Image (tube, rainbow, N blue to C red; front, side, top):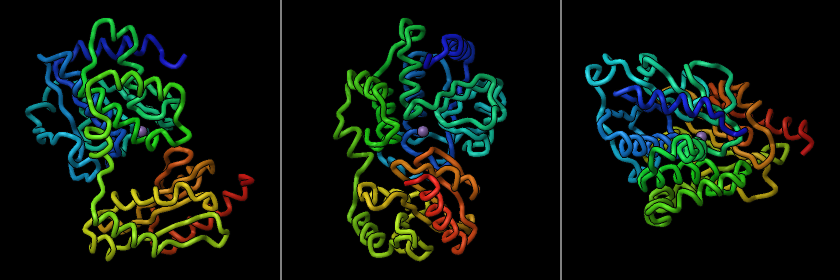
Length: 329
Ligand SMILES: [Mn+2]
């Protein structure tokens, strides 16, 4: 059973019960976090026009700049002094939830596809077999319990599609399943244009991007073991191109299809935290064990971590080389 009926019933009961509903997601959001958040928002707004919905989280993100609406910041009076339902998306551990005021929610519902180490919501709908929370939300909202009473709309469909395309790297990653395509097919029944409304705003490239790619290509190194490619984007690089450490990892996709490279890593200097943001990708090497060792975690083939300094970034590469041998690859 992919979805538990009683949990879907509980979810819709709570949505019906509360007049104030706030949707949260993780910090440094990706397309799944923002896509599922916006998708759910437009679904709720369309089906419950009389209720008040709030989209929360840091707004200083470059991800999908022209794709997602800007939301006004929310004062304590507007929402947080009232009993509200908090819906938490795409976040396995509560310290990564953007906007700490989720703690004030009267009732918390977590909807996620990451393996869960901690439980912090009153209702948790977690299933790691879904490629994206966008796919999980599609399955929930199109389930008969809900769909016999409530409707999808194209705005919601577009954003859930964005969420799925993001977490599967456009249906290329191994997390893509038969059900992922069922969801994508279901969403494409609605009125949005794949190229103009989805892929162009998601992957729009500028000449600056080409210049950063040139920099990454000139800087990347191969590990001593020969299996890991990695690049550092230092403070000066990021300043020169005026990008932050969040954006640096998007150039990892340059390495995806090189079969001599089994794991590829981006180290981006984070001036705010004075350390390196680490992003690790692979096709079939499990990398989240190494990420866990360095204050991180995530999916089996796509993880994030933190390195205290340059030396520690090199230690991570040594660990990944060992891990590849341990896994017999
Ligand atoms: Mn996700």
